[in-house]
Length: 602
Image (cartoon, rainbow, N blue to C red; front, side, top):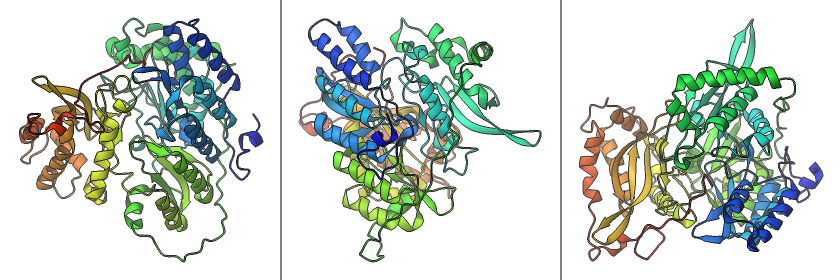
């Protein structure tokens, strides 16, 4: 598809640099749905086909799907945002959802309409292909790659090249389970140790010259059982990135546990085999790949950087007054780029949700203010609009304010992650999605986003143990479940403390099972205890880190101390005393656990 056709909606838009789409896949999907409805396609085969094309099952129904749109490296253009807005109104619920893996999801799509969405996406170079199923999923890249002062070089071109090489590649169409790549600028702004393959830019000096390469981490991942990844070697040369990736995929394809669905992620293979044995296998397999395929298999890295050109706009009327709330927003939503005079702005969403009209306004704001002419999806259900000149920030804030997108706290713990939970997921036990919104609203009401010692902490919530909400690497993490008083059930969350992925990656330690309606009071109590016991230079994150590692000398020295102090909050009232306690957020009926068939490994 030509650049002009990709860009036909707005001639002034920057064109997407890669066309990920194949329009014939939409036609094939429509035909296959008809065969399935006619009983000519069995349920299991259709599920695998549907997932391969990015249509995920919706809670308790076979008539609707969630369409997951891949956004490789998180790069999203104004024309694409406008098309997604249009499709959400025509075929979904008038809104979209930004995930923690840089995808954009459209929920509650009638199965027969999925092919129409695929056609619309193809018009702007997007695809849902391999966004679900046992394939290499969306290749992620830190939204700060290219603007972070800590990075050795920009990993974005390598993430895009990896995504291009693997999309529709026969080698990864029938893996034992889903497989994830994550590129980052630095360890602080990514999750390279918490995925199957994590890639971090690195350089070394050889004969007075700087050589590009990477640190590669293998075997990490979050889920019912989580593991932190291992570094393959001290330095992986640039030309070995692809050969390493192929080697790892080959080993997983051959040796992954296809019989046990619950244990067929690569992290289990690494854990059961032992790191040294797995490491040796990868290095040997890579040598074979390099020797047999190096002449014909290359990574197509585009060395030309995106054009950076500050938009030229007609000055708006209204003077130079700074809107109310600007200072708070500036403090908690902007990141100082390594390029002098420019900022990256992180748009805080409520648990990743955004309306069609807001998507259009984001597209307009990108055109008006971003010198690179695109946005980057983040790791925290947010949107990063980069290359905003300092002088333009007040005007940009004013426009965001007009469309309800100027919430402060995006880069603080006041912007928690919440997976979709019982709003759409078959496996969810609680409405984690709504709980995240309730926490965000409460924190902003209390202005906790403005407190510097809470800034680097995180709250992440999953509706079940499978960790789509990344609770395992949160300062304060929660995953959903249910508890019972006699015959009456109420929603609960198992709380973990001390997780992190900012360099010193570690998994949180389980603490207490907290009733859903007591989660917010529990978090506020932890903050209160922190303020009572902190040292001058402490943040909440560093204080909890010392406690879980047994090196704190205040009144709270261990997880058991937390348990003792917080346990009164876990005592359930009777249903007669508080009937609301026995309902979940967003539901006025009595709570019960009900799940469908999960499709993560279908």
